[in-house]
Image (cartoon, rainbow, N blue to C red):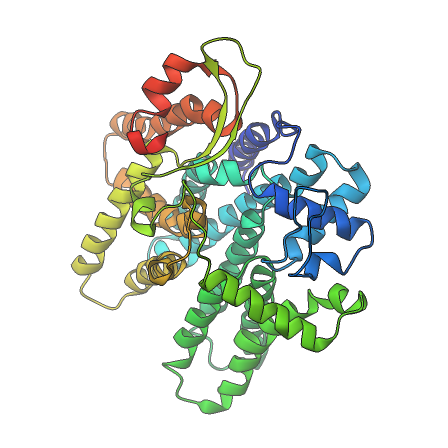
Length: 449
């Protein structure tokens, strides 16, 4: 990395760190789904390896019930933080912050790798390197402005853990794909399939964070299986992309077995989790359909401040950055146009199609579910659309010959999402604002209330 690149990337990380760490310990109490995740993490920290896996449990503290509905990996990290920092809001939210920053770092190097090896591979070495750096800087900056990403980075839930391991799995899978021309060197082939195995490992850790990873696991397996001509590779394919993820998922439940449960209890818990996810009849005032996520129509109200001055309000809403959301809508349209425009089966078209497929796989399955769903379920799909957005922006800007005009357009394209981020930041973090301002801006749309 050049000094300029390092400084710019460090500024993006510092910005992300500051916006996530600022008042991270507020609210002082558990809010939204923390009332499920945090009690489970506290019990694990206390050495109670039974109750967090008991789907028939009663109340944990007279009010809150520990989460058993999701896999336990995120709660292990939260329990570890609580063990060293105590039972306080900073301790149980800090792992989400850390994994959000790690996600941003992985996202940066994923974009850099895509630029050098897939998007701009026909350019000269210097051009390819410059374009890849621009792609990574623009993409990671835009991702740091995403409202859903920010809110889920400041709450003790499991979404950013899923996000981190999914991005890591996609990164190693692209490294695996970059070896596609290797045929003769056995050592390089071993490296290639080592990255496919690593993909399975990270997919397993993603699955152990949240079941949403299952769709990506099946998609990558099918993608590798369908063009398979040499079926001698099938056993390793099954081992890497099916056995490994599910074995790692199982390993995450070892504390349950050490706590006194049996293997039959493990399978009963998985069955109960599946039935609860598929047949949840509970209604929620802030649930929303997947198609509404595309338009940022229905946020989730997490928290409201109390004991505030008259005509002031403070809230936490899981809502996307409105302008960035508009960019992503345009990206969907541009993606369709570009895929239709590129007639050949070039690496570029295959890359765009694959990233778009990852977006669809992370989003479309929600359309078949009837259970309550929320806009934060859209988070794992967002980075794949931001990858495409970043590529289209870099490609658009590099075609502008006039340097001053290119800089002016680039500045505006990046400044205004930042402006909206600053305006909506209080709405994502429960900073106090005048009620009239909140009504005029944050509740501009009726569905945003």
